[in-house]
Image (cartoon, rainbow, N blue to C red; front, side, top):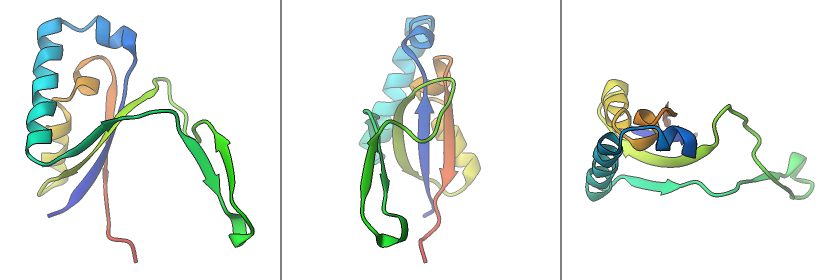
Length: 110
């Protein structure tokens, strides 16, 4: 079955201004996804790793990507189609609490 990575962006302000019942539904949705085997987590502070030309590894704290909202979490989901993956992502806290969720189709590496 095809796999997708989802990246959720959101902040505390958007979360707090979302109706508590809507947030509770979104958390229950995430619990159902986890129970079905979705690998999901909350993002912590990232590091950037480089090894240009295989000449040595350098590590720098902080994200490489930037967005208006901080990365809040991620999931690896299986879905038959992109549309199904979108449907699954649309019920998560970042999607309903004034954030955004990106859905990235994953391809097998060569």
